[in-house]
Image (cartoon, rainbow, N blue to C red; front, side, top):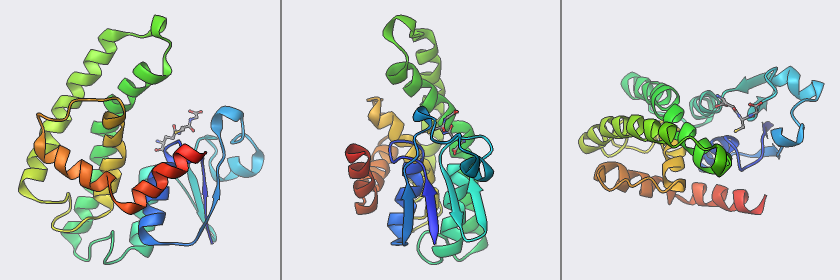
Length: 206
Ligand SMILES: N[C@@H](CCC(=O)N[C@@H](CS)C(=O)NCC(=O)O)C(=O)O
């Protein structure tokens, strides 16, 4: 049995999206790091960093939300979220790394400043720096999506989830995506998928 740790309104939403997309059976333990729920020894044996999300699957323990999605797609998503060919698989890894290293730092940095920093402590110069970095990543993404309907080729895969789940921060913070039409079209279609819509409901309900 797969167990996913982490409340829906956290990076665990990325994993819920994959679990729902694949129709897998799983147990959800909605730990909240802000309530100290990740500091218990049993959980820290799974994730010594005491962060969410984490996942167990029998003897397997995984951390890092985007890596967890690669595990789920590779293990349970053959022909669905995990491509059959080596190039498609490499593309899934490429875009996952890109998401973690290029897109997430400025997108999360901006979100933290705008949504989690009190107005009197907010650094609008930082917000601008993050916005400029984000624009460069969107240029890259727009070029890729102008050549191919999905990031790993002609089919929706875990690559799309691992990038779209991070790009969703831009939607949430009302970043104007209209200068990147291919990104806007692709992102809207990804976020509208029933599996993601279900996760959005879980976030609201939590
Ligand atoms: N790179 C990690 C980041 C995990 C992370 O920072 N999670 C946040 C919640 S979304 C957390 O647990 N923060 C608590 C802390 O930083 O101590 C991942 O993608 O899983």
